[in-house]
Length: 326
Image (cartoon, rainbow, N blue to C red; front, side, top):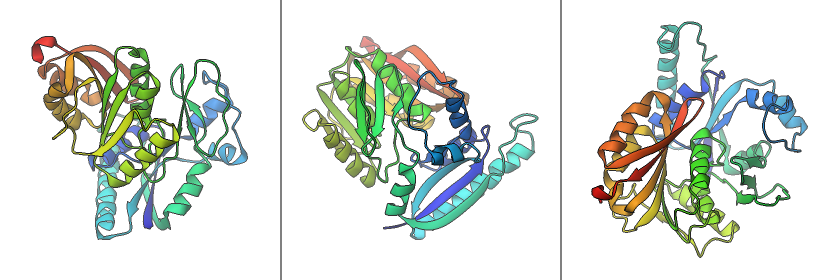
């Protein structure tokens, strides 16, 4: 299948607002290349040390920050490309007008597009996707990389295919950190908007016996099912097609939702029927500027906010359903 590779060049400061723009268009699957993370790794500023630096990664340290996404080479895909160009232009205008503060620069905000195919995408991606430790115990590794696990580590093996979800983005890693903290409190998990299946797989590795992943994108569903099989968890995890929790008859001890602020608020209103009394709700994909709005929406739906974690411009919220709300 042919695709349009869209690469938007920006700066470190521009990554989060640009991510928000892309997600506002309904796209949650994209690749962030942030050279400052590579520089930090080379300077050993990170907590974890990995032996996977190769020449391609070293060269990437001198590159601009960018976000890459893929669209189908179709009329619909080309229309979306026009929307992306318009939104990026508007973001640049707002930056120039000082909406984000004095001295803030989002870089060139240049949109580059070219036609490619899924084979080209996979080969390019493999050069940058390496094993990464996203929590104290959870490792995410691609199928083509070797990794020797240490005692107490839980290794999630995935092939992102065209679903792009790798668990490295803050919205996913924050969810994983909350899930690891709450391990032992859940046996049945509902993963809404499961993408490539990372959170579903993590839930099973952390002790869940019955996991249901819900996803609306057919490509992501196929990839998620493959990843579940790669980790030998087909007996514990089911992946189904669905729109949030509409028509989902499943009672869970934990619901995870790595979505967007507006969708989290919408989901909070409906997800109560899918949670056991006192059940946990972990939501992410929330920009800090939307935090108060999402907190209010979750509280109004009958939840008690237990904790909030932040990473750069993103936050994740851990909440518990009040028994009186059931």
